[in-house]
Length: 403
Image (cartoon, rainbow, N blue to C red; front, side, top):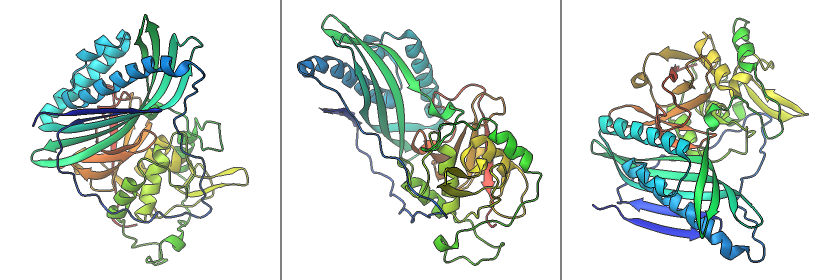
């Protein structure tokens, strides 16, 4: 079937839809969200805003049309994986090279996997707009919301992600050109902070590693949200289906039962594990255990391993007699539903990103969910991310079946 395109532009948002329709994969019913002791919600969703003064509306249409063209081409590239058409609207040679290398890598990988994209839908929300007084220069922060439907060896499934980019545009006569593009690579950001905190925990992972040699306390479990489980320390079954269902429910928004972190990937993974009945190891010390009690009295009441990828990697790598524990395996094809992958982008043993396995492709390879850069049923190796490098290493964790 010949792919079709349909474009619609509204205030503050550009929407592009492309591709042939394909039957979708049935959605898993989400499980109720557990609320840990002391948790509460924070923050509100960012919305699109534009400042349009008298006489600006007509002139704004020029740069909006340039953004619209960019999103349309971006959506096309999600199907054919070619960057050549972007040269007509983008003057940023560095980004064209970076983008072209990414697409070439993905095109080769998808051919080797036998994967055929059949449909792509991309919407771009304007999160922030800065216009010069004469509108000769404009910068915009956009969120690209991509949903691709693919056919893989006779099976059809959808993968979704949300990327952010900052675009700079300049007027050249009556037309606007995109002079610079900066992808926002949140997966590589080393800092973490809640909505209440601006300070970094740069040495949190080292503290967590050192603390693993200390005796572990009795795990803290909030039995109010786990009424069907006994209070014994042993024999708690890891509900992989519940962990994956929670991951699918909250992949693109924050659960108000928990604090929202500036870099939220590991906080989200910990929530998924807890939703699958993994018991917390409550020590009351941030550098040890794996636990969360929320923000209260001006204090951050959670362990570093709950919120920092490198600290969670250290915690899962260490032996434990109780609470959450895992086994390191050699390859992605050894993982099961609800297992965890942690990413070292630079190959320097500094792990910066976490994902959870929520589905599998036709070859049995993991598809993962993540947060910070919201992703659902994304291929596990993350070669579609600007965070990925030739030196990227992975740590694969098979979560114990019982705790």
